[in-house]
Structure formats: structure tokens, C-alpha cells
Length: 352
Ligand SMILES: NC(=O)c1ccc[n+]([C@@H]2O[C@H](COP(=O)([O-])OP(=O)(O)OC[C@H]3O[C@@H](n4cnc5c(N)ncnc54)[C@H](OP(=O)(O)O)[C@@H]3O)[C@@H](O)[C@H]2O)c1
Image (cartoon, rainbow, N blue to C red):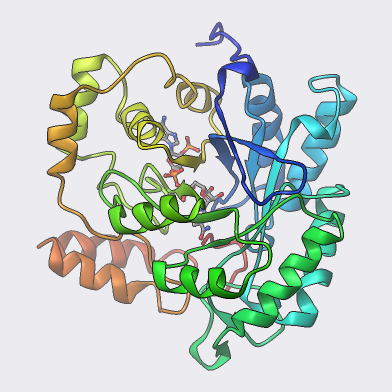
């Protein structure tokens, strides 16, 4: 695997972000940086490997604690001549709930820029349609700290960030059609992007139709179901239909998921810190799914996989387990987890 070819960046298609400053293009595939447990050195090395492999789009957030090592890795990549300048990269970060207040948006963005050692972001997203009492960043947001978001004033502050040139574009994450429609009703700079959970098991047809009609680019997160993470599920990678399709094409299930997202016109952020797998995830642009594959994919039972930050993580997981008749499996997993640090323990490294 050490001899895998480098993927030239010109092979990675890009999409135009309609309301960005200067007509910014976003590479369709981005590298996710949410990890638990989180290790700065591992992340830094992974980003350098990803740049060598051809990744130019990186997805971070103040919540993930990945801004600092990502910033160090980008600086090192320029120093080492892997890229000529920061302009070759597309960097997304996100405003956490505790900073989702009009006067805290600009300081939060400036803090992200400082951590990333950047003068501007390419994309700044409202992470969740939820505000929280200002203070320590953590996941999930305790119930007594949750506040309804003042969408008008928070979005106005996001627009100021773009006008100031501190980000090329702005957007949202985890917004439903209704919430997005609300923002669009008063925005002077419409959101360029809505980043949400999408995979073959949670295809989000309605939201996709809505975003397309409004010119909002959809980015799929957890496109592999976040297998192997504490917040994710094995259901996507273990899906029998996807396994069959992968076998027929001599590809992996991960490649089928990402190819499907690409053919759906989506952009996507996928996390692998493993050198071989991050390269495998780029090998999706020179083959196609067939109509028979689509028949199978369209029949996959749909359900949301991710917990919301305003809930205790175990509640939706429990409901999900009941829905899928897998309560016993869930119980075994949950009892295993209870020996690990509490997943609802506001460690600040928990993804969302
Ligand atoms: N906006 C939001 O609220 C939100 C929420 C969740 C995630 N995100 C963003 O989206 C990114 C991606 O989502 P995610 O990390 O939750 O899940 P994901 O990308 O669906 O899955 C990541 C998991 O899959 C494994 N993996 C990656 N490629 C693989 C392959 N080819 N074969 C087998 N396993 C593979 C990774 O392990 P290895 O590293 O060991 O390969 C990791 O455990 C995040 O990192 C984050 O940046 C945003």
C-alpha cells in the first residue's frame, strides 16, 4: 500500500459556492477532523499525509479541539513545500452553541483563526441551530444551559464576518428545511452550505430537494456512519446491500458510500487518520454505480444515526436500538461504554 499513487488535486472536482466572496470553489471531498480519543500528534501527522495524498479541504470546529494541530500541520505543509500557499486549501470551521450569540460570533471566529494560524477561513458554519449559555465548550449541551437561538442577530454577525473578509463564505450545519427557510427569509448573504448527516442509510431526500432549489450546497458528514467512533454506528459499513454492491465493483463499502454521495451531487467530509484508508477514500472518481445498484440503495431502510447535542446521547441510541430490534446488542455496547469515560461527560473532545 506504500506505493499508492498520489492523487493530483485537479482530479478532485469542486463546486461553486454561490454567495461566497470572490466565487470560492469547494473541493467535493473534505477530510474530517473530529476524533475521540483525540491526539494532537496523530491529527497533525494525518493532515500532512492527507495533503500529500491530495486532500485540500479540511473540516474542523472549535468543539473538536482540532483547530490548533490542523493549523500547525498546514503551516508545516507550506514550510515543507507540499503546497505553495494557504490559498490552495479550503478550511471550514464552526461556531459552537456557547458562542452562538450576536456579540460572541466575531470573537469566536477570531479565536478559531488564531488557533488555525490563518487570516481567513473559507467557510464558517453555525454548528447547530441551538444556543447555550456562554462558557465551556462541550457536548452534549446540558439541558439547563440550552437557549433558543436568536437566528436574526446571530446570522447578522455571521454576515459581518464575511464582509470583514475573515471568512470567504458562511453557512449552517444541522439545519432542517424550516430553519433554513427562516434564515433565507432575512439573510442579505444567504448561507452557502448546510452540513448535515447523510449516508445511504439516511439519505435526506426532502432536505436535498430544498437545498438544491435554494442554491445551498449540501455537505454530508459521517458519510460512513462514523463507524468505530463513540458517536457513530457500524450499520452503514455492515449493510448487506452496500457490501454486495462493493463486491460487484471490486470496491470497498466506504468507496460505495462516497461514490453514491458524489453521484447525488453532494459534497462530503469523511474522516480517516489512516494513510491507506484516507487514500482509498479518494479513489471514487473514475467508476460508476449502476441502475441496479441504485435499486438496492433506494430500498435501504432510512433512519437518522447521530444523536443531537441537546439530548443525552444514550436516549436516541436506546430508541434506535428498540426500533431496530437490537436492544440486546445496544445493551452490551452500552455496558462496555460505561467503563470508558462518560460519553455525555462534556470532555470537550466529543464530536458533533
Ligand atoms: N457538522 C456536524 O455536526 C458534524 C457531525 C459529525 C461529523 N462532522 C464532520 O464530519 C467528519 C466525518 O464524519 P465522522 O468522522 O463522524 O464519520 P465518518 O467519516 O463517516 O467515519 C469515520 C470513521 O470511519 C473510519 N473510516 C474512514 N474511512 C474508512 C474506510 N475507507 N474503511 C473503513 N473505515 C473507514 C474512520 O476510522 P480511521 O480513522 O481509523 O480510518 C472513522 O472511525 C467529522 O470528522 C467532522 O469533521 C460534522
